[in-house]
Amino acid sequence: MKAGPETRTRPTRPDASMVLLDEVMRRPLDPGYADEAARRRDGTSTRGPRRTLVLTIVAVLLGAGTAAAAVALQPRDSVLTARSVLHDEIVQRSEEADAAAEAILELDARIDALQNAGLGDAYPVLLDGTQRDGAAAGTVAVTGPGLVVTMRDAVPLLGDTDTASKRVLDYDLQVVVNSLWGAGAQAIAVNGHRLTATSAIRSAGEAILVDLVGLSSPYTIEAIGDPSTLPAFFARSVGQQHLTVLGSRYAITSDVRREKSLALPAGRAAETLLARPVEALGSGASQNRTSGLPTP
Image (tube, rainbow, N blue to C red; front, side, top):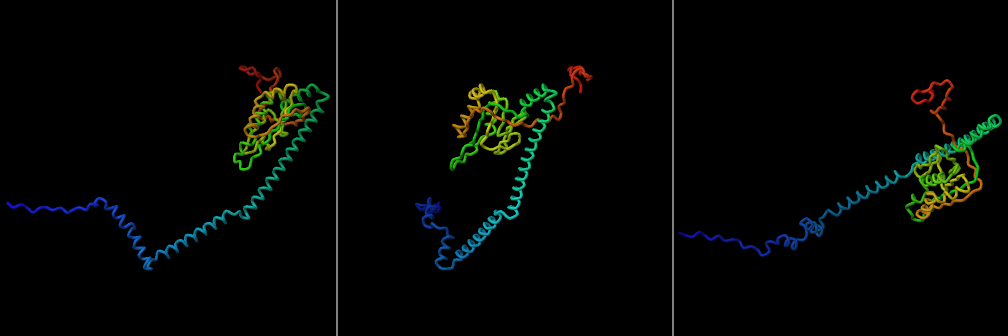
């Protein structure tokens, strides 16, 4: 029995397992890069002119886009004209509103004078009661001693970006006004605007409104009250503590001073659209069985 031919295996290279590393060491460049380098040496490459053309086209397009954007962002004559017209209308409407407010105050003063003249001789007791009620409601001008609290926005420093916290807010005015009421103030006005039972202190954007009238710094709060108790009670109130915190933390300055005589204007009386006076009992009006009140 003959033995079969011996199977011979091909000898393996010692670095057979490092073929990838060998390729990287022997041929570091991609064949495409090598061919391009050879063409550049021979002077037959066309990539250079083509790339220059592409870059030129891209630069022209970018320049045209930048120029178009700059032209679009520039204010046109129509926009400037519209802004000017709008500014003029705002100024005109503001002047008309101020004139109407002054006319209302003059008419209120005339009404008060006629009322006083009509009731002074015939009904002096009724006149005294009406004036007392009007002073308490804020619809009658009053004078007397009291306190004046002035609050000013902080002056922003150079490079200071946090300017919102350096301004007096509607909340700050509310705290001081409520503290003055609690200390015994009988009449209060903010920047010359008398506060009534329906007055509101609020903000609209960065502006502070008192009864829908915009105010600006400095804010002057005038309060009429008993000179022997009002200053002492306010000094121990939350309002005085709040002023101290605003000054130490936010650089909002304020001062409180006494005045021997303050004159506060009359405020606007609330219009009663639904309320009606209750009829006196025994005037012929039928009474409600369940509540005992007269039926209108």
